[in-house]
Length: 245
Image 1 (cartoon, rainbow, N blue to C red):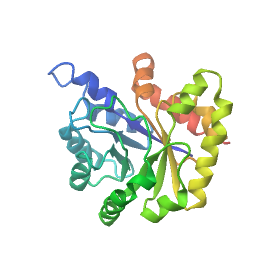
Image 2: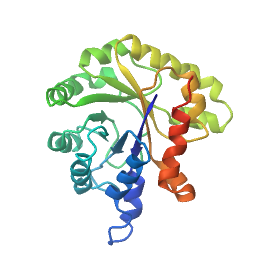
Image 3: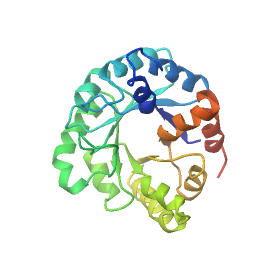
């Protein structure tokens, strides 16, 4: 079964609009895990527009009560995320090449241009016992090159698929993502996926792209939670992930 990691950035975004601590990010992590989610994801940014550094520490403390749950921290190691990861030591660090002012992640790593910078970061995280995943586009990289850097996984940036799905054009891009997954897996890398996946487009993606280990879902999950409640929203995704393919 593909694991579900619940990204709580948008919960923090709502919380930050008023100085009263509601909604409580840790409480929503508890709801997600109690409903069956496999892990929690956060993407702290330097401006703390959503997840704050204090949230990361609070979640790490809370997750000690859930030893089977994974904690995935996303972020750019060169704009502050690495310092947080050194302190927290999450299960997984997903390295994302976003600029500090970016509204959201919008591209994967240029591996060739950044491998000299990435290699020591990956080595340090591995030495700390942290699994390392690199955020990558659907094409333009070689899995063996990423494996040589020491990474454990890649996370496929799926917004282009989500956009194509919305245009009823998914069949044109799904072979690209399926090829990317096979490229990574042939090199011995695990494959995660995330960005703009939702209950409508997720089934088709999983049917076409083999052996996805984890999906990280946040914006759509919180949107669904407004309609169904967070626990039921989580269960809806778990129902999709549990289908045999």
